[in-house]
Length: 210
Image 1 (tube, helix red, strand yellow):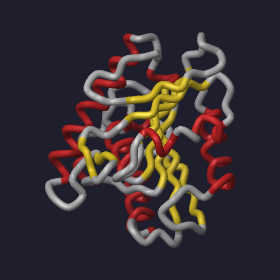
Image 2 (cartoon, rainbow, N blue to C red):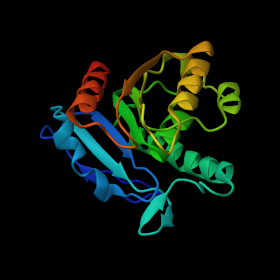
Image 3 (cartoon, rainbow, N blue to C red):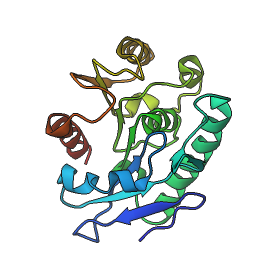
């Protein structure tokens, strides 16, 4: 069990309790940790602990990382601080950054990129699903010294009605031009995870980071 100061969470331990491999999962708008209890079984990665984290703001029965329809920047900054603190806290609890993967869907994807490319230490990997970048130019200006060493997997749906595919692809090209090694996968899907086809890509990427 771990503690997560400032954030509600659910800890799902690996069968090997001595493992230091960890995946932190960040949900999308209006969802919660309950929407991702299936993730450890779907990943099928032995020795991987999973920490499901709730966003800080209540939102129609779920939670939100930032105000999608208001001042998004303020919420992103506040959530960034909480997640940076979480990563630092996990290090002190025995989970090295280079054994920790950040995973996020939609709003959680945005936070994964926002935090991961600013974080001072190299992580095992960053997995972003069906999300986008908040303030690309600001992010590039604030890259950490190890940003170019971070591994980033981005997946997106060709039919996504909420976050336009073309916009996200342009943002990923911008990150590449700024020196980030983006692994990009397109799926014929809407705003969701495309079953085993997409999980296989995510599983292989996460496993490669350890």
